[in-house]
Length: 238
View: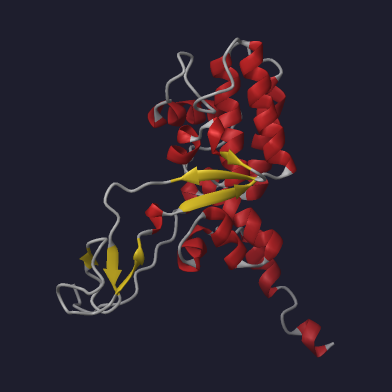
């Protein structure tokens, strides 16, 4: 290694990117398949994927969502870290929750880890449509509208690896190249940034503690690169 320290940056591999223009037909196909769902698992799996696309929720947040998390006009997801800590602003070391000064250098400790906070996802018209479809499917197949939103047939919590396999199978049926389940969250962040042109809004909706994290989620299409340089100087001269 060269021994030099610098700012780490991370960019998703192009093979894992799911752009909004690719996610839109997936969402339409999932909605179309809901009417022919023969069972609760078939309807639930598609609604869970639509939920992740609409909210940008992580897989664990979507599978851990419960009906009682709906509060007023928002959908509140609580992420509780078992032992939240504070990070030193000077040396970066982690300190205990009750401490105010770093034990290594004596510097001040920052606020608690973001995972100890709660995120609120806006209940827009599209998300309400998804939740209404969940309640309708549960009534149709004889499940109570309580507990986990995307529950197993016995009422328990689904396994994230199960949903990943479902996503791979549905993507293959739709002719979509192999993508990680987390790519749904990337598509959400990219769509919000394109619409608002504001990383702060996207960071708030995605539950990111810093817009630096959001910028890593922002995927760029080839057409955007072409538009950025097209007529760059000729328009100015005119």
